[in-house]
Amino acid sequence: MKDIRLDPSWKKALQLEFSKPYWEDLTDFVRDQYLHQTVYPHPRNIFRAMDLCPFDKVKVVIVGQDPYHGKNQANGLSFAVNDGITLPPSLQNIYKEIKNDIGISPIASGDLSRWAQQGVLMLNSVLTVAANKPASHAGKGWEQFTDAIIQTLTNERSHIVYLLWGKYAQTKGAVIDRSRNLVLTSGHPSPYSATLFFGNHHFSKCNAYLEEHGIKPIDWR
Image 1 (cartoon, one colour):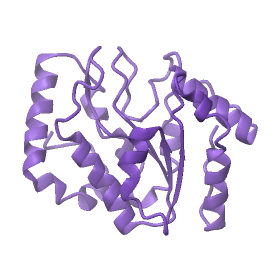
Image 2 (cartoon, one colour):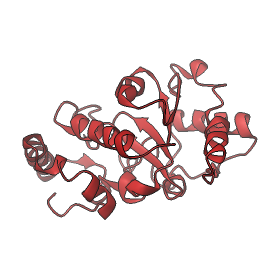
Image 3 (cartoon, rainbow, N blue to C red):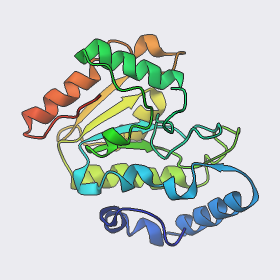
Image 4 (cartoon, helix red, strand yellow):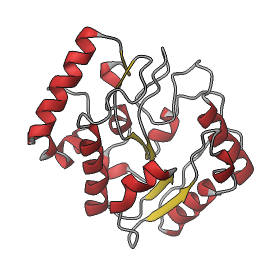
């Protein structure tokens, strides 16, 4: 993981994290996991969320928990799956809310790189997972690293929209400076809590805020 595939803007923004003791322990753990069992996503996609969305281009942050643990699902973007894979229930509900909120139907693909390339940082709290073992890489250091991402963004950037769905994401976003950014919260889009997600109008509110500050809105298709 020394030669990680990561946009240079993030390497610069997070350079202090890469020199901390926890980072060495984390990289040793992750490297060992990839050597001895099946781990998702593919190594080149561990930092895909940031690689597709440079630090200075971030407009929106969507916080997830950890990657999908099924074969061919995880692709490095929170809530997203590889092209051609059946949409997971949470993503189906996200698409339903987009349709109900702004009247457009997202294309069938669940890849979502089309959002990332417009400035949507689709950040999981934990960036790797063992196959068929949800949350298996939690508590190993990824949370500290992704906390640092959010902290650095709120310290150095403004007018970003944070979409925090569910208690986990809301807790992780507690450090965000609400006076310089827009933080939108609701239930998680999982079928277990979707009644608290539907009707949040986050996608229209997000674009209205971006336009209000002279920033090109996101095409959620």
